[in-house]
Length: 326
Image: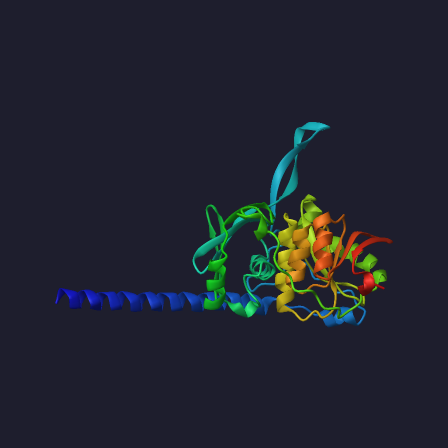
């Protein structure tokens, strides 16, 4: 009888656990679905010739704070050590991405647009094939930082476990914690040649880049990544203290929107990680404000990505596949 009671209790506990997991998944699905429903874009306005800049202040049901990612402090200047004045700092917090209960990576990020970051990181790192592989998501704040708890499909979670790595990144670090050198380069499918981009539209996009950096304008401390349209205008942009994270946030938003043709513009240099992340998400053209590294150019050449550095008004250096530019 004891064995029977034990089996019955075990079945009861298992059933209760299943109900708890199912309930949590419903909550996560509502949270993730609510985020997807709140993300609204109107790229058609830009396609019709209107500049329709969208910054990373997403309208949420509770009202997005204009100070998201900012912390006010008091500082002293060299020429006036006796009087403090108000100033702003960009927030930087550890954010753990947790897949099906297992922590995969900890990144130092600006704590805004975290759902987009989680989706973009998952796509650009090959953890998921599409946002449909994410069944639910929940952002949980603790005293040590923030957890983004992601519920993956069984197929993608099994694939992740097979190649799992644990890393703790510095600000936007792309390879910290990789155990072997051969893990660095991911096999990339060559990109198709489906579009061209007029370089004449680059200058207007550069002029709008600061508009998607509200934290950066107050602190001078963030990188930006933006999607720019070939018919003129900047569709959407994201910012973060880490350049890789800013790009992941943008790629996350892009996966939920129908932006059509275009290119990525980043305010930083073009490292190989930026090229690799862009290519993993099907981006054909990457403009960087600063230079490109040797490995970035090699990867861009190999995966058929058009890479442009020193993107400034009236100037651009094309490193690979110039046939997409006109």
